Image 1: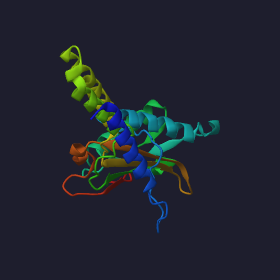
Image 2: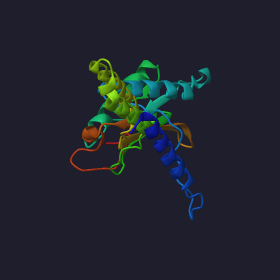
Image 3: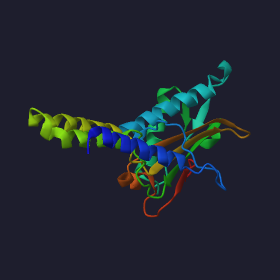
Length: 230
């Protein structure tokens, strides 16, 4: 089959498939959200960045107390049952707050505010691979045609050209076909006796193999809460 015939057949099949699409359904059609970027936690240095960024936001929310009294926070100590991330994040956050000149008090009675945070691990069901990106099938069809017709080329070594192009395009198209299935939601709050003065939520991906670092030790928790108490 010549290249022109194959392209004509492919175009005809695509047109028939498009015409056969059912535009009337008894329920709303599911659509994808626009593409977005989400950071992935890969090392303890990333935890440090989280704590530093959070401390900056907290210091900005508290301000300087109007020059009358310096804002002070009680953080307490991390319970022994938390995972590696919670324990490290607690200590890193304490150090980062001190670096931001926030008064971190040793007792709740001496502090104007109390800081707490929740670490929630989200485990999604195993996801199938995402659909190939538009143009994938056409690309490999044309690459296959080029390889098939290589016998008519003056130099048979030129067969490496469509093969290399196909490999490069596969790397491009395959770069975002797999989906991460584990996430962590970190919620940090600063409260006084009457209101919440600071609250933030951050969501990150992490490797499934590292899930023990984000969950409690000894028992399994979907949500681990640290409210600064023993």
